[in-house]
Amino acid sequence: MCLYLDLGVIRLPSYGVMITIGIVLANLLAILLCKRYRLDGNDFIILEAYAFLGGFLGAKLLYLVVSFSQIDWGRILEFEYFNELMQGGFVFYGGLLGGIAAIFLAGRLHRIKAASYVRHMMGLIPVIHGFGRIGCFLAGCCYGRPYEGRLAVIFPEGSLAPSGIPLFSVQIVEALLLFLLAAFILVADWKWQVSYTVELYLGIYGIIRFVLEYFRYDAVRGSLWIFSTSQWISIGLMLWAVISVAAKITKSNDRNI
Image: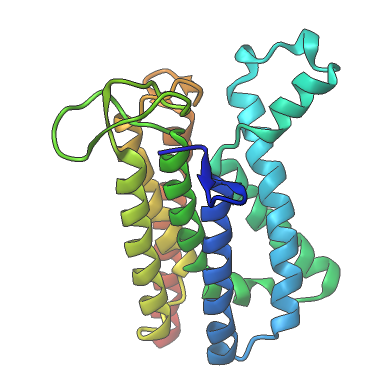
């Protein structure tokens, strides 16, 4: 568990390496999916660029919101403090919502049928996210609760997690569940031609994230009443997914009458 991967000649940030692996693998899968569903690769690249920009801004914005009270706003104009604040601290849900919004914005601006790309590429998000969680584990961020059973890990000095005490490896558990979710969505779209891959992803991940929040121990996540910020967002996404799937099934049944 380390912040950097030491390759002898150079040291690379472990989180960045894992995210890069996830992005490369996702893009290789995207090539196959574009051929499978006859989608334009150039349009995909445009949408992907917007998604990364919207994801970055959304993840950072939600982080600033949930950690508002912990930020020293009196030092916000200091270059070093501002630079440190911008480099660290991202909330996945903010990135997810910001990325999806940016994709549809790009669709409008460039006259691309973004909905088709979102539907068929939805399984790529948990692939990248899963590698991101492995990066979290290596860096020690998003760490789990004190725990001494199986899947317990003791982080060393210098990691972002508390060192010297056994913690639950919640990052690895989430990564494994994300890879399973990615496989399920890709198969559901490829083999079963379901039209609600977006709802599947948001609904199932909402369940995963809601439950795993109880195993998290890092403090900067924000909370309202009995739930964390991410749990409230999870509830909203799960409700939307159920309502949307029900509406699509009802509409399909009406057409068949």
